[in-house]
Length: 190
Image 1 (tube, helix red, strand yellow):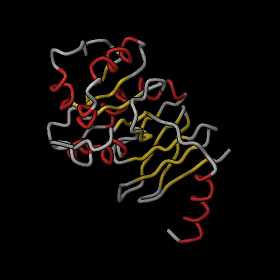
Image 2: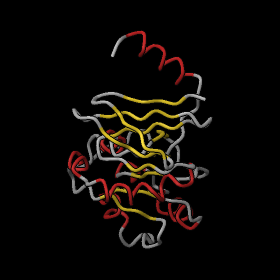
Image 3: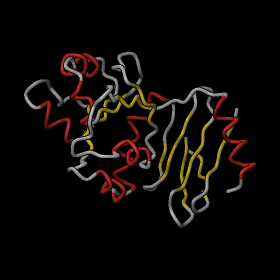
Image 4: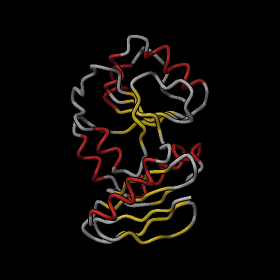
């Protein structure tokens, strides 16, 4: 990469509003057994938009063990789940919430972190494609891609896909196949 290209991308990004799953991290919350979980989830092709207040009015959300810091989480999350919007939560948070609310509805998806967030980078594409489909649907996207791919959509329909692999990767975004160079990116600005 070169500095002019990075500056050009930074300018484009600064003019747009990011879109993605709200990634709830209350102030002063701790990762417990899920350090850097937001980094690794982002490399699964699941776009995250950080927030420090409970994301009550978003189309989809991600909750890690950090969210347990919110004393009202069971009530707030139960209401969010009841709305039918997609929810992704870590197995660590699911364990903490056991017996406090019903996590069985079909819009709740659990990510098996098992106390080792880096292991998420070993998930196979077929599993990731199934996981991403319901999460990205409310954002108006469908992404089929291997692991270690970043997907950054914007509210205006622009997007960036980044390849964290040392080899080229083929991705399919909204039915259109694209090639992404090793450690490279492709973008579409509106």
